[in-house]
Length: 283
Ligand code: SF4
Ligand code: MG
Image (tube, rainbow, N blue to C red; front, side, top):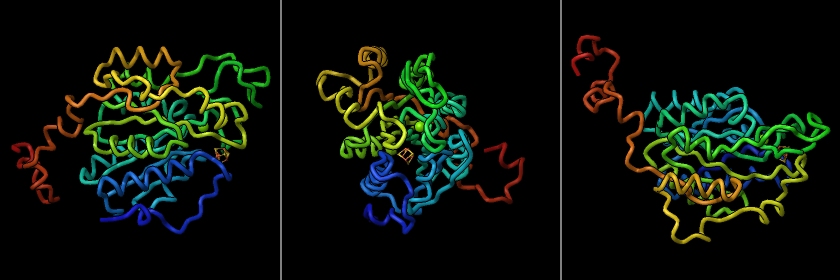
């Protein structure tokens, strides 16, 4: 069985020292090992942004795609080879701005893909502009007078879109983050894991200290039931979206793959290219 070190490669990350993304990379590698994967059983598909580099830093199949398109690629990979564990990753700009249409529809489609968003509440790679996750009043080069837009709440959107797995974590909480990624991988369906990942170079507001002061850990609510969608929505709103832990999981709904008639096990057994259309239709 592979150890987390076997998910490392010899590519040196070029993230800034202190960037939260380092811990997310480590958590993915640990989670992959903890659930018993081998490197050749994992594919990591990323978008564009500082976060997008992660696919190159993990010893597994990987593809560094195009901006906002990690999810269409990841879903294609999963449909083409259902034996693979597929992780998609990207930043808040990648997933919640240009890629938001894909995010919503991937959520409601419920393919068995784990989507990890590295949420630093800014555009880092392009040197610090306001993102959909930036707070109102947030000052950057693109909003010198402060942002006048509301902050997007991905957790509320995910629940509204019919998500079957919604979690949130903090890059500094490696134990919680690793556990949530393991649970996301093991969940049969689409899992959204939003991870607060401080950008130490350009975001001087949402710092490590700021997150530590503002995060509300679900451990504080021992009676919380993650299968209750209304309770999940209420708790997200009550905490201003700063909740961490497993927020919602629906274990009843089947994944997209499991609902496709053409993906019956019989079809898989005959999945050679010489099967005729007539034979396929009879399966
Ligand atoms: Fe991380 Fe920000 Fe540096 Fe990008 S610019 S690597 S997000 S600290
Ligand atoms: Mg970002």
